[in-house]
Image (cartoon, rainbow, N blue to C red; front, side, top):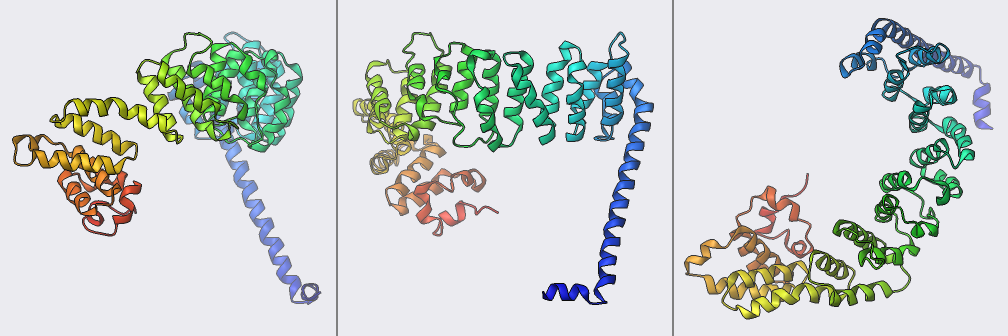
Length: 424
């Protein structure tokens, strides 16, 4: 009521009129600026367009892009003209190339309307472009192509929409992901791209994904699962890690599946997979794959992984008690798996045995650095500081190690406070 009373005061009317006037002036100024830019784009197209169409190149394209996005309007008009008056050579590919770098949602909606009139070779890239650069209006129009599945246009619309619409809107597209109606090799590349975007937690691919055999699709699926884990993917990933279907998978493909498995481990209901991987360590020959499995198991809290990693270095150090390199190799690995107490005792004993010998000069900076990590993790701050100084690493080199948990209790104490710079 008070606000209404104020508005009714005689003095309020001029203020409202001034506000309305200010808004109208701003709108008028913006409209004039837009009109000027459109006119400039029209002139630029008239002057520079022929040279670009005659010889499309980065050099002839760049001057036109100075007038983006307004340059899209004369280009779209030229595209409509080319569709109504076909000529050879056709300017359509060059026009679409220019639109790729200048399109905004308004132009995307106009391009989408022209897709059916384009030559077959240009329809798919134009549809993909209109969706990628579009907005809600274009996306709504593009959904009509989903009724054409299975077809190349329908699949292009589905893939492009999955990559363009807001995350929540991707759920509306799930019913259209029916693998028997898709070119799986092409869709595999889309899954690869989807791995890099945010998706809702309840965006879950159909379980039939794991039944497919197309290698390109399966490769994309594994990459997808490495960022968007699904609780029903465990057996599929285990099959690939261990190559249980005898597909002759490459080491890289098996490693990618292992990475995806580790990322999704928290979503798997039971620990059957961990037990299977633990058993596989006993059966697989020692190799990069078996070591990677052991590291994954270790990171997932399975003691068998750490035991496997340490077994050979421990045996080597035991066979060669006077070989300082073997002792350092074991101690470094002990640090990496969090066995700080054992690593500290190993480093201290070995470094003491080298004191006063020429070999001490052959101890490298990173040996001292790892010794400092071991001492810090084992709560021996004095030796940790001494060995860190002995490493002679510059503060800018040490900066990336500042957040290691073993150093955290000592960052305010000397010499740690001098050696580890505080981030700006």
